[in-house]
Image (cartoon, rainbow, N blue to C red):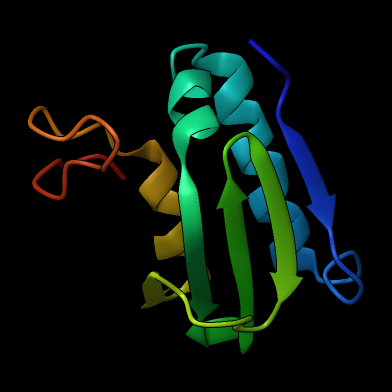
Length: 110
């Protein structure tokens, strides 16, 4: 299986929130090898809006390639808004037993 390709677009490389999200995603792919197959199949845009730090990034997934953009870029398929801590905490949630690629929102993980 090919290694993931992650690129930061201009403006995103100087955004601490973008850097943190990329680092978190890379670490999750290392810690949970099974997630690499999910990453390889993902296609779409996810905008993360951290309201407490007035920052937003868009993650554009394209079958094993991730492009990170500053702000809301294009038309996202999914927008997640909340505090930066809440957005980071999503990575700690176990997968939903019915939909393994989504977090289990009923989880008590924090």
